[in-house]
Length: 590
Ligand code: PEP
Ligand code: MG
Image (cartoon, rainbow, N blue to C red; front, side, top):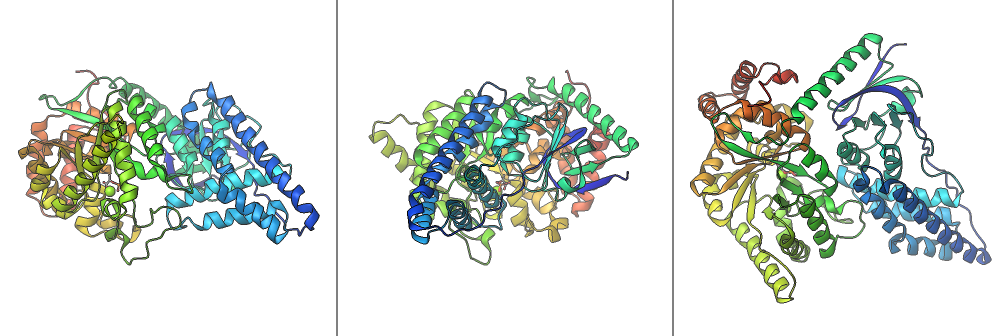
């Protein structure tokens, strides 16, 4: 049988080779039925019973998982449990049954559709929230119809689970003992809970693969290449052997790199960098620590809006930050205030401006919505009493904005203290993501305790290339001369002011750039946890002097292609195999 390759989204890195285990979760059909007046009360009781049953089912799933590894990944089940009783769902469904005299299944379905309508479909972040609402609605409707809700069969160890979509409860059941080797879903995005749980448990996964469930059958051989988002169904014996060999090489590499976990990221000439992690959820903390993360360099707090139809409260923020701080045990945790705006807006709101990327985003949005910002700042100063919290403002364009944000922070702190609550004023930093901020970095450095370079946006705004637009992706060049000059001037400005300078854009986690970054003299690098060991290994085999020399040479070149060619040549010479993923980067010890 010929092999078929599907391209999906790289949800969780790693290679898995195993037999396919399809999970059938067909959508439920919900016909409309008109009911008589005397049936209304019975319909409403059915709704109550179905919600009760749904709550018990989720509690059951949680109880089964509580003792298992990965129990900390189940917070989303709590969110779904709360959504089951959300008045916007229950009251509206009841109203439809009463006023429109329709069967309760149909009322629930219509209410779900209405709630989902509040979430934009264009943004991946909110598409995932629509799925959360769907899972909750589907659970109630299937219970009303007496149909099975969760996957019940356990796949044999080493299986590759293939599903159209998976609810968080299904994911928890399938993954709780970690015997599943890999995961493929037709639907979903890389911020879906399935993807997040897979990443947290480090199970190779591809989501959004389109036709996996109709291409693969139970028992077929299947390869998941989670790093590249590839799925190979019925690989030829040769392909299978190649992937199997790649998987073993990868495991050996990881095992070797794992030995670096507790060693410092220090160059051979004695320059020590701090290796930090970027996280979107508290659930990522154990994985980050296991990769040797020395703190959190970027916590994207806007993800706290996930799975909610209402805004998170001060208490929600406080508990969340405090949990992360405690889990990080005294290591620094850099809380970035909401990077909301554009399509990342609270439910029901939409930015209709022509250029959302240049619109009311991030710190601008927060200053325009002082209540929302105030709640977050109060939560941050309260949580800061329980660990090493640092606060960071995104998308700052100049000194006035920093002063305004700091003023609000002081106000929140004084208010909390006056109320007799425990609080601490955290160190304050900004993200340098706009060329304007880069150019006045010397002045900004006078206002704050640290600068963190957000290259993802800095590159976008410097070269004028939308980071989401594949038509101009060819212009998105981290090694563009303008970017390099800017990085150098930001780092120099921070150093001259005696302030810490970090980098938390994707550039920080790419080993190809590590020597260049050493040349900049950064204090900290923040990246996805799994990238830490390899970057650390490059640092430990390189010298900062070599980095500075390389950077000087690069700044004498003109085009991004010339610069990249020079960097590749240097890295290939210094670290043979690194760029092919073989990572022959010198001895682990030393
Ligand atoms: C950045 O812009 O580099 C950054 C880290 O922020 P985000 O990717 O969340 O925009
Ligand atoms: Mg950014």
